[in-house]
Length: 434
Image (tube, rainbow, N blue to C red; front, side, top):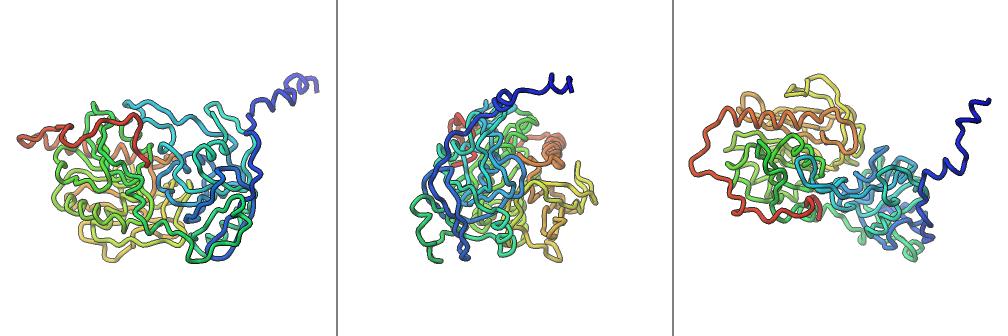
């Protein structure tokens, strides 16, 4: 009893470690779904109403990384975890060097259209936090709603599929729900073009291996994972004519991105030519994986509700580098579209991973007989957040690039990297978002 009284902190002191978010908005808010359901709560973000595609994420942590992921562009993001905001929001500034790419989170700002939570934290505590979730949403002009039953919303979305919606704030919340034809479908637009960099730029230019990155909406941790493995990275717009400069690089990387891959047929056409004529390693993640598959001859389709979360199990069907056939890996995912599993597979290609829950294609690779070194995965090996089961796929890819470079030491006569011919001045911050 005496020991307990010594180590017990006074109530006022223990509560002092958390920072109060300040007064939350008293504005009413309502989430309307195109299928007719409405959920009423209160606003804690920007006092404006928006349309979007309503999706849910089962991730328990890393709400800041999810909200800044460009793949959530145009979407109303529902978090299934009841309490969101308890560790606040960090400063989003980082150096640009061999270890970092200019941001702490996954892009320069919030990418989703709106946020839906059951209970927003009124206090936050973390050593790196500089503001609350509510303050961040207001400052970023992002509407948000709390006090709604996210379990019921998630069950609806799980059963009927991803649904168009509107988050109505203030006076709009008490107005009738929009008519069916008023709902906006973000997948009808080329969202990739909105989030991709507009100009080429370089990161870690002194790296020992030169990697071109086609930016479909890159998460910053993808670029971070490359430069931290000493790659000299050149980030290109999603539809850049890579074939005109491909001999300047040792490998090609295709990033994640939002929306419908069918909006990116220009990139598919460019990559198809690359795969036919170029033997250097190619690696794609998420949207990049779908672009590789479509260039190889596979079809992409829209899933009922997609996979979004940090706990998606995938089964490896083949071995490559650190990946061993027959092993299950737990992965981080965020996608609405997937590649169709066809039988037979296109010549020179084979399935790499399959989802253990819904049997969707989670990866493809070139066969050893094809003479190519190409891999694509639907999940995110770099996570941020999520498990790191497959993080070494970045090492595998760069090791293959270095191996190919060592095996082909002759450089074509006249090929030099003249950055001025196609590069703009490097920006002060990594351009992974619009």
